Image (cartoon, rainbow, N blue to C red; front, top):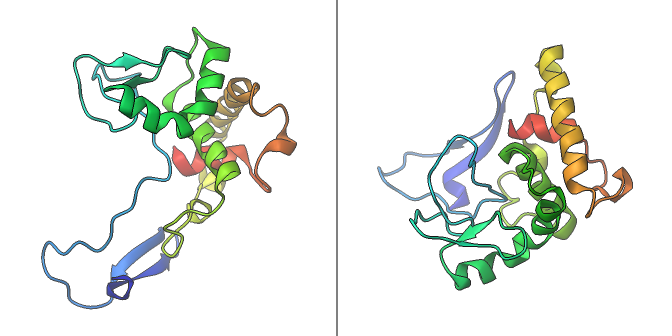
Length: 179
């Protein structure tokens, strides 16, 4: 279906996709799993599974970090590949838990180290996202700097120094890409 749309760049606005021909209403153009995701528990009291995102009243907690929650043992088992390194970091900083944004950038780093190429790279990759870092005010850049420090403290059990980050990885750029 890639022939139905194309990538384009709009100066000052960023990257996008546009149809290359008239399309039927309701036509599914594509479907991909998210590169990474995390639940934002800071502002929401919603109970949802950290793997399948289904809302549940009763969830099982990860026996290691006590933070991640799952519908059942199957969801927990299926999530382990992606949760394993985060679990180590969460245990290390417990009882403190970094913000969802810090955890999200941590997951991006783990994903890039494990699997640098995304299956949907024919469209856009994580590297194509724009950070808009140059347009940010000094105050916002300072705030991102504080988040970067928090991230380094959060990841210290898994990534002891910047040489272990993916090649060319700039923490501030990735906070700009995700914020």
